[in-house]
Image 1 (cartoon, rainbow, N blue to C red):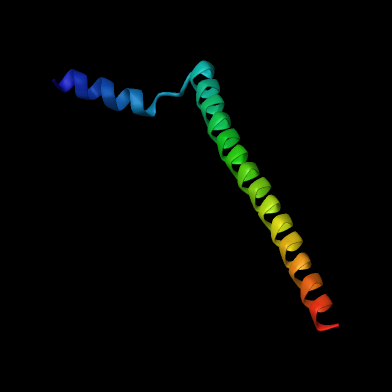
Image 2: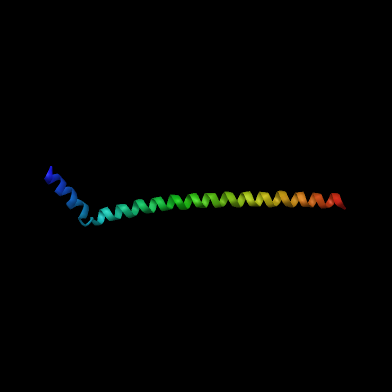
Amino acid sequence: MIRELYNWVRNIYATPTAESLALRELEDSKRRLLEAQTAREYAESMCKYREAQIKRLTAYLHKATEEQS
């Protein structure tokens, strides 16, 4: 049991291999890509929403000014 604990502590402080560092970086890059894609989807949706809102409000104001004339 002491030997297992010793090995566990030693592994914690061991210098990671290049492959292990590359794997961590790859996984981090994948997570960041997913976050960026989510942000892009949200921004595209907000642009479509605002364009529709502007179109709707412009039509409403156009109709309202015609009725007053």
